[in-house]
Picture 1 (cartoon, rainbow, N blue to C red):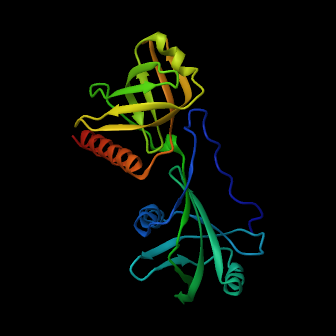
Picture 2: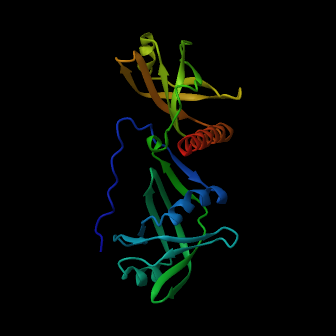
Picture 3: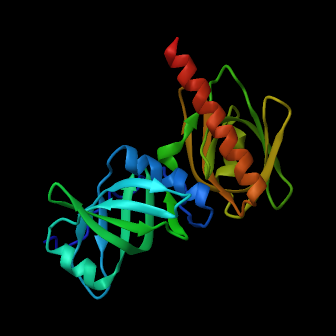
Length: 251
């Protein structure tokens, strides 16, 4: 049996600040879990009052029926322990996303000698996205202006270099903008999207990189205290950029 949980790679220094989120929407939970099912991701399982770790996989999701199906536990001695406990906690990391949730077992069955379990659909999941893993670059030919204002009312204007659901990197062409890289307090930013939409939100500077060759300064950081509308607007914009990138590669 595994005596220690699988180790996770440490985040690079350029990772944006990470933020846990509790997701309760069934639709959003399904969106998070489906890639795990489709790619047969290995999931770590723990049981109440048990210090051993087991592995499983997500086989199916049925939102309408309110159930999921997971593979039998490995090593197999976890089977009897799970039937006795009646519930388990599942944890996995896949493509930069950490997911953690607990479910109760509704039915245990087998097919061709292989055990599987029908569980309740999770009421909520704990979700942590490693922001750097989902950064989408913005073409230099497609300038997207970003205004940043500090608490002392100093304003800086640059161009979006890359963006994720949780943070962004802004490119400045003037060395004098180095003052922004030393900003410790939360700033306010405005991202000017191509269709004249604007995303206004709080932004926390996390790191900076001055490139001598181009004379440009790149400042990266994380969005802060996003409300639902702001988060959805950013997520949709990131998806738009991903689609454009795929179309460009397909040509």
